[in-house]
Length: 300
Length: 300
Image 1: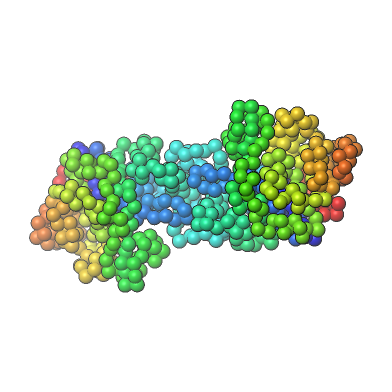
Image 2: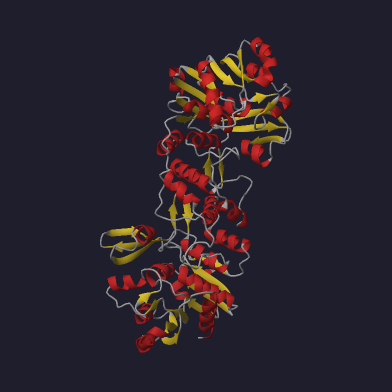
């Protein structure tokens, strides 16, 4: 089955791995609003989470980066007075160095990503939301913050008031992204943060019109985000963290919301938004869980 | 004693460490003709050898790079299809990343180097030959080669016919270099390759006039270079690899050539070039050897 999925990082990457294991002919459209330049390197955290998950290189325990990672670079960087608030593993650095070098040589991010996936023997496609610059600014009570500054440096502490997606007005979907959505037999919105992982993609002209009848897996379980600040953001935006709020957020884009058994009582509220609720276990502790959840998404 | 030393990489770095241990108030003027851009990073191999030696971080067995190094980056780089002909250790990468970032931000190489030495608590100064671009091209029978391509990728196999120092015509000595030479009570030419480590420095306007009455330690012992292609180059240039050839090469710049006991028979030939020969053990197996040799250089 041809599947196109919109995804952020870790949670979305787990479902993407499950979809690939379940035999989907998969194109993942990856959020690039979290991308940033750090230490002179071009870093694309969500693309990397997807690539590592699909290549079987991801560290499942830590929840980000590569398995069997070492940290000599960070130790030496600190000793030399470099910025150490963003952790870069020694092996992970190879990804950033190669990407930075090829981008500096004029290659688009989509081509660099495709080449890396090919090299790693990954059949699934990962297409950046856009090859142009797209940067999520988190508006907070203390002023706007670049996403990684909000997320990593400030540990999501500042109270959120809104989001700005710099560059979204002029960015264009990367080659293959709209085609994948058009040809997909199933469009999936991964269990990613709606505000900072999926909305930056949808802010690029073309995506909102191309996403229809999607199946979304809710990133909220029992009023909390499995990982990351989604629930905290909902609260700060005056919403009750819930799958019903997710259903409302994606109204018009999704036909089905897969919610966790813990939230079975929310099914009626979800359906009141005009979205079908499918109640199943949604926690992905390992690739088998992810594949099982993926099959439910494909069959929904 | 105020000492200014001209140096290339490993051999020179050993003597520089010895000079610092011997209590010299040391400024090392470092060859930058080997500098190159690789994987989008600005790499200054001779500066790094000097910094690591003076900070006590150098790997003495391997002869280059840092002690206790790990190699995850290179393994991952190879798996991703990156260029692996030049080895970069995980901790060593921090140096290149910080330097590249600061150079890209417009800081001169001399300032970046000074900041790193300060951070590492090194009292000695390392001043790049120049803050401008200087690039050694090795002319060979099969055409010119960028230095690192000749040295690392081609393993010094091509037959050498000459050298070109790109940028030397317009480069200026980095701040502090000529002052150090002017104020030095002792000028030292380290046991570095005359053609590719010292000549690129001397090719920058101002240095040749500022170097006078120097003491040089010969890089040739028993007709061979302790490390690197100096002897092979001499042969290919039609010279007999010898300390006498070194004396002739530096005629007008040096007053004394320190040669190894194994070459005591060359003393007369050295003195025939108008250069005083000092015959002592010159092999530096460790920092104690280096300090002992440095004391001889300071007292010569």
